[in-house]
Length: 395
Image 1: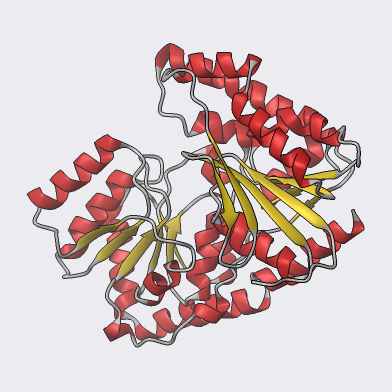
Image 2: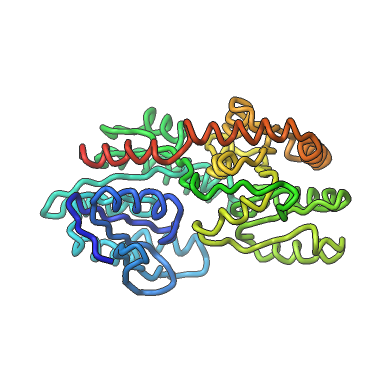
């Protein structure tokens, strides 16, 4: 693919988000490319490789170095010699970009080194998670290990706020993260680039009676994200001959075993379906083939302070939403009148509301129309694209 670049050269770096991550690649990288910027992406993975994507974007994959299987020992060792970051830094120096864009907290430690490059580049941090809660509140560790995780999370959050004064800009994905930096950091420029959807053009008007799945959960599947509650919901929906699709990665081997056992024991093979995560450019097929979007997250500070991207995706495809009754998710769903909120621990209430919406054509259509209208007017990436490009040009 021949591309004539006329603008800035931007190097995007991620250790935790893959090359085809929705925000990093499908939103930001392609936005930059459309606006004439030259893009290079450095990510971590299981291999050492480099090449170009189908859109002509150059990328490098750096193999992650593991010193110990034990997470605590690995953390201690890499604190003294972080080989993965050293390899990233070496590539970043050869790229000679005007702006470096970090997507993960692991790269904070190389910020000063990049700022010292002879050509004096700018560095931007995409703040995507409330770091303390991401590391501690979602942790499954117990006892002494949990205490150590808490200390580690406190340190990492403190360090993130402290080091942010060296960034030329911090761009938060939502108001909760933005307010945290505004209150605790000394960065000169802090702003929000909301993680709105880019899938407007993928929306299809498929009749409800032709859609395969009655409800869909999309995204990572963990205990904290209601794994066992989803199993119970699937079992109850089967009594109404309704299908629940779980689309996403199940992170723990034990949960995979529990899923297989539960489905087999309750004969739910045709009603509770799990599909491994698909590429961002393929997820629209499953949204178009579903009727209701489920966002059943358990109470947790990490869930309360952020807005899940799938809510905007559900709205975009006209899927009425059933979400937990707390935090930003509750606020958005009620404000836009696009669905109902529920007690995430009450699977009977959840199923009752799913059936209510499916059986009430007027109610379903109201939620459907409100969701699409909200995305088309307020929650679409085009609005963020203009703002993002303006910020980078000003840098």
